[in-house]
Amino acid sequence: MLKFIYKEVNPQKYEVGAIFFEFDENEPLKENEMITNKTEQDLPVSEYRVGKMSKMYYNPTNDEFFIEYVDRPLTPEEKLQLMEQENQELKNRIELMQQALDDLLLGGM
Image (cartoon, rainbow, N blue to C red; front, side):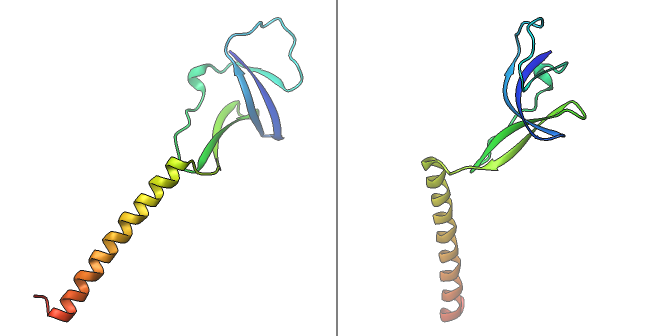
């Protein structure tokens, strides 16, 4: 069992704020706290996505946790990586255009 704090987005979607794996089951629940029979193994694992951040949600209708990805600003490292990738793609295009131009002007020599 686990306990979590949530914020209701709509009746089928609660945003999970914190999860407690160890807690006193006799302690009364506070507002926006819920206990479920799910275990740590039932929780979805988020994956890294450039420019995205994961948010965990809970669906009380089917007792399932799920993850959604929302936009976030790029880190300096991610910006640099994207710029390097774009730079390499531009170099490749220039090389292809130069080869095509050479073929046109020199007749494929």
